[in-house]
Length: 293
Image: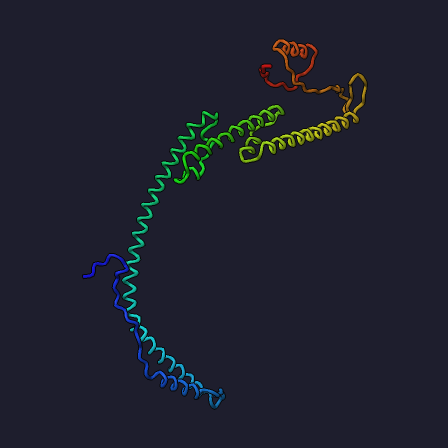
């Protein structure tokens, strides 16, 4: 009994088949003679039936030849088809086993990867306080999760990335200060920086926006001045800053100015009392803000 252990010992009784076709030449001659009879035939009223009959004979001959070919092909293929069916079934069994093994391997590797990820995360959280950064701000690089990456390399690269974070923190603080100093909302500019825009480009953007704001303010001021000039031109100046409109009402020409004052609480209280005592209307006032200088 043959105990099969490898395919090198597989025994297959195979003999290349032969088909004896002694009348091949006679068949060739038969077909040639039949086809020779159809050459030169034309279709006329007198010959159309004979021409159609000849074509029918040729088609019948072709079918008969095909039937013989198919008969022996089926007999020829039958042994191999049985042989192939057996082997393909075994190949399918191997595919199923391979897929199960793949799932097992993938699950194991995913578990190892998750364990390495947790170790890297713990390392980041341990190192973060030393650099003054937030551990959640440092994404884990795919390279750090590879089994082939040495621990020393991971520690070194984490340190380098944390130094980058420290610099980014400083840049964002500077951006915030610039915005607050210029009375700009810092959030949009911080977001630009977080999305990858360099500190220099963000600073240039702030400067450009300030210029645009000043230009817009100048245009608004000019339009307002033109409007006041138009109103004044339509009135009669009766002196002492008084104007009479078209309805005969007396208007007062006043000045509007905005100050940002800084002083002690008592000094600002004195200013407020002065305004009230002299009939100066406070159109708009912000809440007091305490600063230390």
